[in-house]
Figure 1: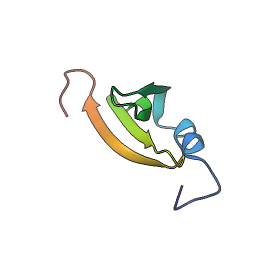
Figure 2: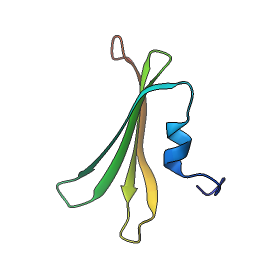
Figure 3: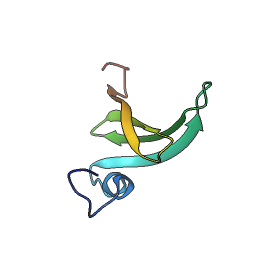
Figure 4: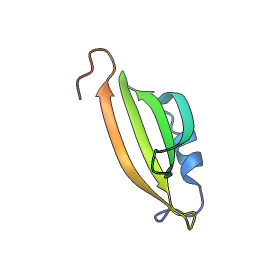
Length: 74
């Protein structure tokens, strides 16, 4: 991470204490882009963050959303 090179993004999210039911997935879009997605529950809200994996193996956040998981409100 640019602000803290002593840990990886995975370590930061995996050790996020308030985040429950953590899940990592990886998929390829229809136009062959590689995406890594992290989801978890924080205080009764669903959190989703997606990273685009570039050809040079660098990544960038392309999507982030927090939604109330009881009734779907953002």
